[in-house]
Length: 79
Image: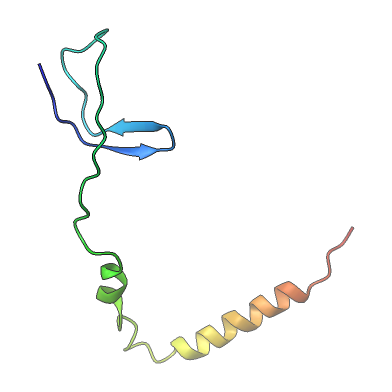
Protein backbone atom coordinates (compact mmCIF):
# COMPACT_ATOMS: atom_id res chain seq x y z
CA UNK A 1 0.00 0.00 0.00
CA UNK A 2 1.35 3.43 -0.93
CA UNK A 3 0.19 6.82 0.27
CA UNK A 4 0.91 10.39 -0.77
CA UNK A 5 0.61 12.63 2.27
CA UNK A 6 1.62 16.28 2.46
CA UNK A 7 3.24 17.87 5.46
CA UNK A 8 5.45 20.70 6.69
CA UNK A 9 9.14 20.54 7.56
CA UNK A 10 10.15 22.03 10.94
CA UNK A 11 13.89 21.51 11.42
CA UNK A 12 14.44 17.76 11.23
CA UNK A 13 10.78 16.95 11.90
CA UNK A 14 8.03 16.59 9.29
CA UNK A 15 4.49 17.24 10.55
CA UNK A 16 2.02 15.35 8.36
CA UNK A 17 -1.34 16.86 7.41
CA UNK A 18 -3.06 13.50 7.94
CA UNK A 19 -2.35 10.21 9.69
CA UNK A 20 -1.06 7.39 7.48
CA UNK A 21 -3.29 4.33 7.82
CA UNK A 22 -2.09 0.71 7.95
CA UNK A 23 1.62 1.38 8.59
CA UNK A 24 1.91 0.88 12.37
CA UNK A 25 5.29 -0.73 12.98
CA UNK A 26 6.08 -0.97 9.27
CA UNK A 27 9.41 0.35 7.95
CA UNK A 28 8.73 2.93 5.23
CA UNK A 29 10.74 4.91 2.70
CA UNK A 30 10.18 8.65 2.62
CA UNK A 31 10.75 10.82 -0.44
CA UNK A 32 10.68 14.57 0.09
CA UNK A 33 9.51 16.72 -2.82
CA UNK A 34 8.68 20.42 -2.36
CA UNK A 35 5.11 21.46 -3.11
CA UNK A 36 4.94 24.48 -5.46
CA UNK A 37 3.85 27.69 -3.77
CA UNK A 38 0.24 28.71 -4.33
CA UNK A 39 1.27 32.33 -4.78
CA UNK A 40 4.37 34.07 -6.06
CA UNK A 41 6.74 35.53 -3.49
CA UNK A 42 5.81 39.14 -2.66
CA UNK A 43 2.23 38.87 -3.88
CA UNK A 44 0.83 39.35 -0.37
CA UNK A 45 2.49 42.71 0.19
CA UNK A 46 1.40 43.88 -3.26
CA UNK A 47 -2.21 42.95 -2.47
CA UNK A 48 -2.11 44.95 0.76
CA UNK A 49 -0.47 48.03 -0.79
CA UNK A 50 -2.62 51.10 -0.36
CA UNK A 51 -4.78 49.58 2.36
CA UNK A 52 -4.09 52.54 4.67
CA UNK A 53 -4.51 55.23 2.00
CA UNK A 54 -7.75 56.44 3.60
CA UNK A 55 -6.20 56.81 7.07
CA UNK A 56 -5.13 60.50 7.24
CA UNK A 57 -3.97 60.22 10.87
CA UNK A 58 -1.36 57.58 9.98
CA UNK A 59 1.50 60.02 9.32
CA UNK A 60 1.08 61.70 12.72
CA UNK A 61 0.75 58.32 14.41
CA UNK A 62 4.01 57.11 12.84
CA UNK A 63 5.77 60.31 14.03
CA UNK A 64 4.56 59.58 17.58
CA UNK A 65 5.69 55.95 17.39
CA UNK A 66 9.15 56.97 16.17
CA UNK A 67 9.48 59.60 18.90
CA UNK A 68 8.49 57.06 21.57
CA UNK A 69 11.04 54.55 20.24
CA UNK A 70 13.76 57.22 20.38
CA UNK A 71 12.86 57.95 24.02
CA UNK A 72 12.94 54.25 24.89
CA UNK A 73 16.45 53.91 23.43
CA UNK A 74 17.73 56.97 25.29
CA UNK A 75 16.49 55.77 28.67
CA UNK A 76 19.43 54.83 30.92
CA UNK A 77 19.75 51.25 32.08
CA UNK A 78 19.69 50.97 35.86
CA UNK A 79 22.11 48.51 37.47
